[in-house]
Structures are given as C-alpha cells and as structure tokens.
Image (cartoon, rainbow, N blue to C red; front, side):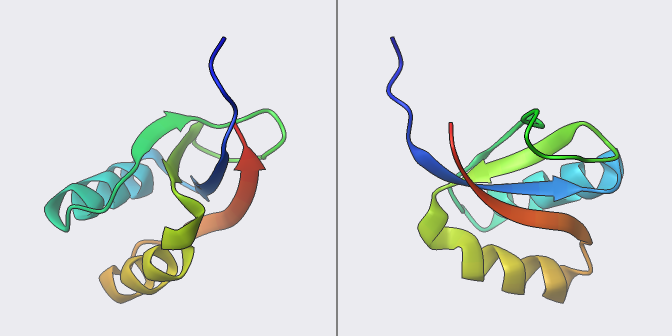
Length: 78
C-alpha cells in the first residue's frame, strides 16, 4: 500500500491553464505532476498540479507572474 503524504494541490479553471502550469514547472524544474482533481476539491477542468507543500509560495508567485490563473491552492494528504 502506498504511503499517503501531504501535497500542495493546485486546481485550475481550464485545461489550458493546467497544461501551462505543467510546462512552466517542467521548464523551471519544479517538482510535481499533473493529477486528476481529488474528489474533495472542485475544479472546472478536472486536472490539478500536485507538488510538495513547501513549493506553495513559489508556485503561487510563478503562476501569477506567468499569468496562469489557478482556481485554488489546497493542502491535502494524498
């Protein structure tokens, strides 16, 4: 059984926003991956970015600077 860990889950309004976030994070070598939105989070597009919780402030800042609109930042145990 996989161990559950705390993650920063970023939800998006659009699939394009989620894909732009993935591209930015890959370019900047920020740890994380695209996941299906957990049931406890509502999202318009169904995709979310999952990253270590210590990256939350960095992600908030970089997404804002890049014009990527996030629907919400959530700390969840996945």
